[in-house]
Amino acid sequence: MAALIEAISVKRRTLFELDNVPYSCLEAEVSTPTARGGQTLVRLKVRNLLTNAVFEKTFKAGDKFKEPDLLKVPASYLYSDNDGSHFLDQESFETLTLPESVIGNALEVLIEGTIVEMLKFNGNPIGLELPMFVDLVVAQTEPGVRGDSSSGSVTKPATLETGMEIRVPLFIKEGEKIKVATEKREFAGRA
Image (cartoon, rainbow, N blue to C red; front, top):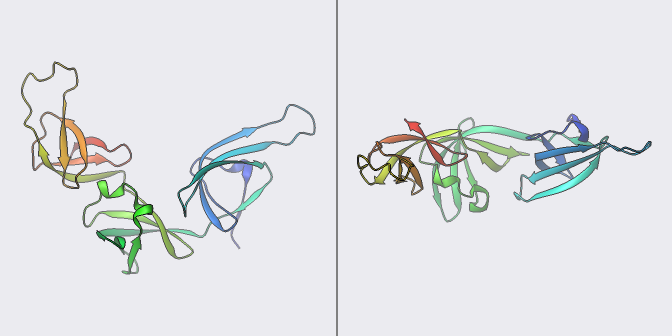
């Protein structure tokens, strides 16, 4: 039997199941009553992992949730088409497909062969976690001009091989491989 999680112990990034749906906690706030006999309440901001919907809900401190049947498996990105984005499960070697609504803007940082953590609920793929950094090639950028730092910012726009545009330092040239932080979609160094 799956372990039970009390509402009072739910913290940020805790995964739990409510009404057979997996959720991820984004924020947790405990409010203790001032009056005697009052109940301690836990206000949670959660994301539904199946629909990506975000909402807030208040629970009693003693409410219990099931631990979700979630599994993270390594998968490599293959390609995208009209059916969705296709990944190869690195353990079972089966092809997993996620619809565009689940992928969101992840394709901005995915190139063929990128390894991600595929999230499975009851054996079915429901989402993915990107690596912290990915290495991408600069497809197009203007050459940096010496003394071009009058504006204070010493960056220039660059288009990456995935089509995403970010700001990079002046010394970065076309064809160079750079490290990109996936969470903020920004330059993190040379690869």
